[in-house]
Image 1 (cartoon, rainbow, N blue to C red):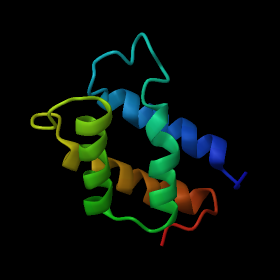
Image 2: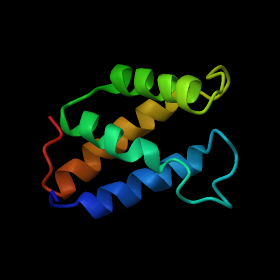
Image 3: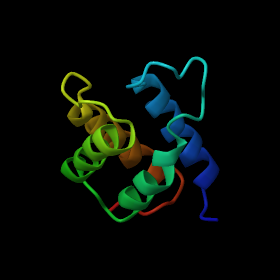
Image 4: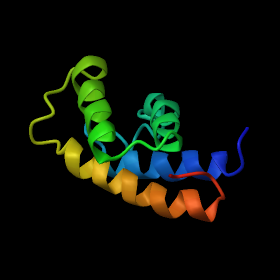
Length: 96
């Protein structure tokens, strides 16, 4: 396990639950956990907003069966990348 993994996963889970594209995070706290590992892998690999946006769009459409229109995955991607820039440095995780 990499340093800061638990904190990173919890922080990312919090962001995804705030976004809550399905609208059930108040009842199901782990609904979006399927996106944690793939997102963290991309972030650790240096993914930018465009790559995170594309991943979120694909998940919304292919995994959750939702139309991303109106769910603003591009805005969420920006939040995730900004969050990672802070958390990655604080935890000593490469966020190049």
